[in-house]
Amino acid sequence: MGIVTPGFFGKRREADPHLPPGQYETKDFPVLSAGPTPNIHPGEWSFSITNESGDVKRWSWDEFQALPIEDVDTDIHCVTRWSKFDTKWRGVSLDTLFAEVETDAPFTMAHSYGGYTTNVPLEDLLDGKAWVAFEFDGEPLDPEHGGPARLLVPHLYFWKSAKWVNGLTMHETDELGFWEVNGYHAYGDPWKEQRYYYDS
Amino acid sequence: MTWRVADVVAVHEETPTARTLMLRIPGWQGALAGQHIDIRLTAPDGYQAARSYSLSSAAGAEFAAVSVELMPDGEVSPYLVRGVSAGDQLEVLGPLGGWFVWKPTQPEPIRLIGGGSGIAPLVSILRTHAEAGSTVPAHLLYSVRSPDFVYFRDELDALAAAANAKVTIQYTRHAPQGWTGTVGRLDGARVTSWAAETAPADGGAISTYICGPTRFVELAADTLVAAGADPMSVRTERFGGA
Ligand SMILES: Cc1cc2nc3c(=O)[nH]c(=O)nc-3n(C[C@H](O)[C@H](O)[C@H](O)COP(=O)(O)OP(=O)(O)OC[C@H]3O[C@@H](n4cnc5c(N)ncnc54)[C@H](O)[C@@H]3O)c2cc1C
Image (cartoon, rainbow over all chains, first blue to last red; front, side, top):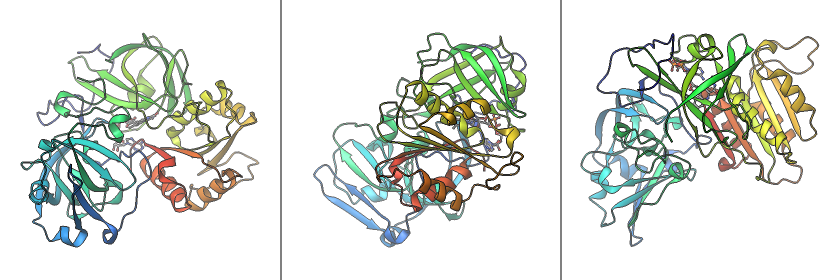
């Protein structure tokens, strides 16, 4: 525990078991992005998975909407220290997408419109842990929050939930993405407070 | 890197609602212009709250400076703006962030757009630019309510007097007496005309840094991209809020 700051008492007193260390709860939905918000129309959107042999499986927006859609109710945790509880999303499970892909590679790189990337191990995307989400709170996902679609990997810090996602590539080794090259942690577990590259 | 105990060596009132804190951080080796630190406060019962604050000090400055705007219902900023005195101690982590940064080795001209406390990392960039004797043109567009709410007033005047830096202030509510420019919210048209005025004559590359409340950043960044800027040349730091 740190030094006590005289005269500071804080606002949110109760210890909340849903709150990872160093986070605070917000009811807002702050925006963290490195640059301008890309404006992608669903008609031009597609999502692809490229395996280690270079085979590409691609879904158009309409093909994507025809896949089984799941409702997701989850807490999210941003590296800039806010957490938001019980957020409601709709999207397609990565299990559904990977059922159509042949791969043995253990690592993925998520790619987004605008050129952003973030690395996530494949096992963190499977078994009901991740989605490609296109609805938030009953509405189409806002562009500034990643619309038309973003990755949703809520058990990792939220930058891993790549906004404006348009595909995954499969890799034999874990390479760093845009955010990770720029100082964020390679894995990003909020419960271990893996915020920055030097956190263990 | 771990949390370090910083001494508050000085506080300076920037505006009626904002203040700069000068921090002596043991082992501090400077930062890149544009980076931030996290500041953590601890209550007597161990409860902690941490927030991010951009450095307003130049990259190589001995003391790290942060400039904080009071959010009336906030948890941390009221303490930093009203509660802290010189001689107090705070915990800090950093410097942090590797994208919203400017290095004096960058060859291209720079454009800076700031709203409210979003001026903080942009002043760090301008100070670093001046100290490095950089010859790349630097243009700042600073949106602020009224003259009383201008941060770094004297320094901005001095920086603006330098040959290769130019400061444009957009007053959104009240301008100083004798002001001949426009008054009003920074809108798309204003950003577009300023961008045209500041574009390199040779049509070459330029980097843009935009910082402030989220809405402000969205507007300025969208406008520049609509006017043809390469999105990857526009770096943004969103401070929050609606
Ligand atoms: C990388 C980064 C750098 C930052 N640098 C600075 C800085 O240099 N100077 C500075 O003053 N702040 C800066 N901020 C914002 C800062 O981290 C806090 O969010 C801010 O001080 C409010 O904290 P709080 O605890 O007082 O309010 P909270 O208790 O966290 O929030 C109170 C209310 O204020 C709203 N709010 C938070 N921030 C803003 C805002 N910017 N505009 C309008 N409403 C807001 C929240 O939505 C909330 O409703 C930065 C944020 C980031 C992510």
